[in-house]
Amino acid sequence: MNTAPSFVIDRSKLPPLYPTHLHDAPFWCSLGRAVATFGFLEEMLKKAVFALTGTCPAPPDDAEAAAAVDDWHDLLQRSITDSLKPLIETFAKVARHHPESRHKNLDEFVDALRAAAKVRNVICHGSWGPPDQNGASVPFYVTGKPGKQAAVETRVTVAWLDQLRQHAAELACEVVNTVTHMGYQFPGGNGPGRPIA
Image 1 (spheres, rainbow, N blue to C red):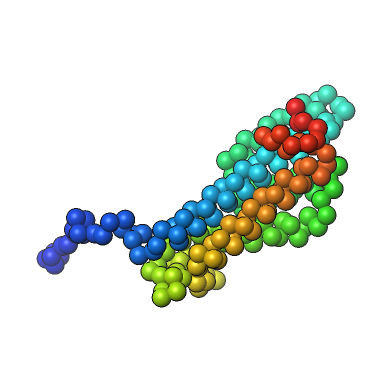
Image 2 (tube, rainbow, N blue to C red):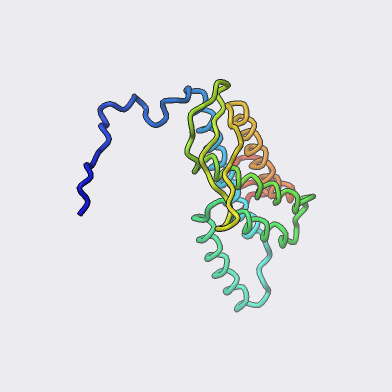
């Protein structure tokens, strides 16, 4: 029988804003803005999947057209709840197969999206250690499959987070361009182009 004494945290003695109390507000502001921009990127990818699949011509055969509509419905249902990584793969597939696609360097763009998704996982799921004297923090986050794991060692600063937010915003704009390059109006916007009905 275990007779060792037990202990509990005295929560009344924790500092205000625990466990985020060690970082200044600008760090959390920049982190929150970066996370929110990745949420915006996901929204643009979902709308792009809708636009790219909704503007493909239907098969001429009625039975094939009905099956295509059913498949489209299933794809949209999955896409609306997908996280960033599978959403990027869906976007890549539908962008490659659209008969009117005009996006140059699509493979390189998709690689950039994939790389950004890895960083997004770090900032969304990492646990932030105390900052050093320069305000940099190394998030506790481990990547990789069992046996091939690696801990993140990047020292994250406000400037780094601001640059990441800007990069995610640029990726979101390029997702929109994938649709607008073809002459369509991006869903939810009021820009130029043919509306997608």
